Length: 548
Image (cartoon, rainbow, N blue to C red; front, side, top):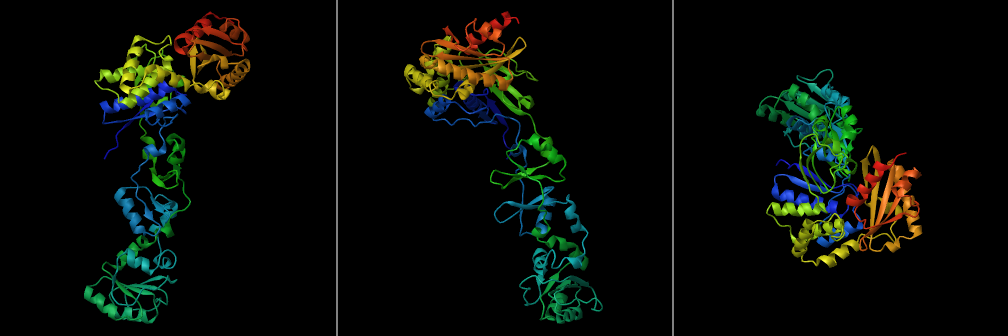
């Protein structure tokens, strides 16, 4: 059965409740409308405490974390690979190479791990096609190997040697003379009773009679009581040519070979694939065989279909975006720096939350989210609109939130206050983690900058010492990202005001952005609660007016 094509649905980096819930619910909606494909929501980083709590409260699993969309080896490898046991014969491996057109056959040890490989493309394997039959016995195979691999018919009751006996294969098509086989050798001969009788008397380890009729073969079997006699229907030449196929693979496999892990990115192993004359065994996390990765798979990595939600900025999107095929964008922010190669469907609405748009899309498709899904969407709307108090809130948000609350059977006000409390880490959160928890990068007027937001239910927790610690952490983020400056607003979601901190090596610009307030103290901005609708326009305006 052909695997359905996976279409990824991704929010922005450092995912908040709206990004995570919107990715999850957009994927669920698309899956209902398009069951022929598989829609996979992903997170571009670890979820915050509020988001984790919200998904648990709804009883819905968090999407997996995947910050990089570039294909892994495991996603593009050939998983339908057939291996052989180290106890098998070369005939088994040869059958796989011919019948399945594999460039290698992995050889597995008893514990299931890859012990070696067989491949006609390896120089070490070439001797198997240019052999000396006399050198095989006792080196690469024994008499029992030949009997089992070539399915020889037993002609007398004499048992096979209990263990391998050093010796050679000796070919004698006529009566024995010079070069007759000795003790421990295996004689390959035609249906000659005299030759068989003489070889048995000489103490050979075994006799293989080739060709002739079944009656002639049985007559030869009765002529030797001291050695096992077997019959091969074909000619001596056919048997000798087939000896390599009787070699146990453990004696012929190559044990020095390259492997790749299923978790590695495909583009990171291209050079290894290019210089390796065989497909590479792919190992899973337990070190067991998962598939094969060859030049064919390396050259057939199609663009990953992608739907973006809750962001329109290139600096906020998934790694590997350049090689992805963007199918759709669903957002409530400004149209930013993301560009697409082909026209795509864009649903960008001026509402307070992307989750509001997803809820509207459910209704427009004539569908209703399940109660648990409604709760997830409601929590995301509450988080992004600060319980419908943010200036970004619209009548659509209020109407949709009320509908979702009824669907989820939760009191809007009580549930909303609990959602906001789950996001408050101002008092005891680690400053370095707090300043990047909801940080986004932007560009304006040729300058790159970062803007972060921390929400609290009590701005009184922002003491002078706490401000200094947050500003020091913000300095580190600015330096690490290489942006011109970094801004942080700490927002009291109940009182509807924020404190603004700015990290900027250009002191004059920092003073200008803060309207000449000391950087260490920050500046209170009554009524400022939205980064999107208030902080960013404020910063854009100040940057447009500022001159060095």
